[in-house]
Length: 133
Image (cartoon, rainbow, N blue to C red):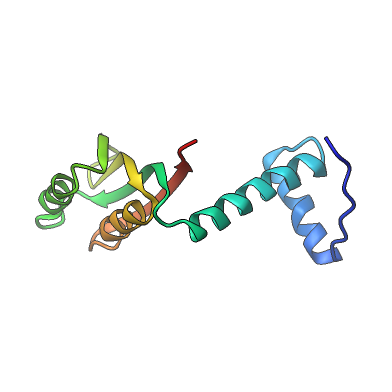
């Protein structure tokens, strides 16, 4: 490893220190390395929207919403080339959670996720992308 000197303003450093406390990092270097990796991944995704990647789309929805389950299933079938597997969990009387494992081009996975999470009665949704090595 190489030692690098970085100058941060007090407010930004306070944010880094808060992150260290929140996530339990041993020191600032570990936190800054993780933040750097994350930032570099984001830059790569933006620079290469066609890049192959894996993804996990997690979303929670109201299972009683009219036709929603059917529409979500149809959407997955229409994009069967992107969907590797889906896990369905009943959270309570009203809510279901699904985790869709995806593989394809970054921009295609982002569009797939946007279509799902913007559907009426989908309450929460998050896509995590991991570039293929």
